Image (tube, rainbow, N blue to C red; front, side, top):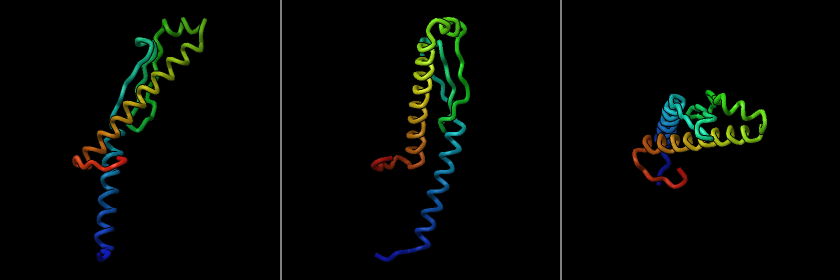
Length: 105
């Protein structure tokens, strides 16, 4: 098998373009999740950047007596949004690869 440097460079350029497309798609994706029945809600980009954290007034008032519960609700909402971001990343990768089923991707 002959090694074709030009072909390899073209493949690398294509991979970089695909990665840039995926990054743009994920940056434009907004995901939302909540916990405690809406007591805490978060908005996150597909690149896992936390965009907004909202705490319902009733949850804030209740936190005066139990701050650890509010902290747990925040963690749960952020983790739920991060899982949605992971799913969005997998979907973006799959669509860019045109349905190729590559192991580990």
